[in-house]
Length: 88
Image 1 (cartoon, rainbow, N blue to C red):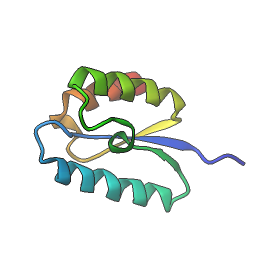
Image 2: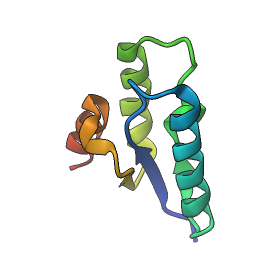
Image 3: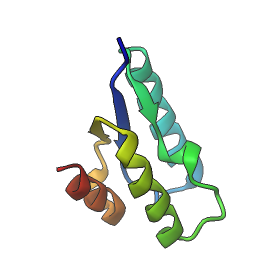
């Protein structure tokens, strides 16, 4: 039986990179330990990407996910709102 794949969505822009990195990694571990395959933006978006490039990568990656996991700060993220809209 294949694990369900989950995409993590949350705020990155406007935060210190290390803080966003930590939040996404904690969520990834939490979900992995519950049996999910995890798609996490920090892993798939090159650090030097523009916002538009990052969103294109993330929205494309969502096609591989069964569901979305929203970090608590998602409402403060223009990108997370777009990701949620795509997921619905």
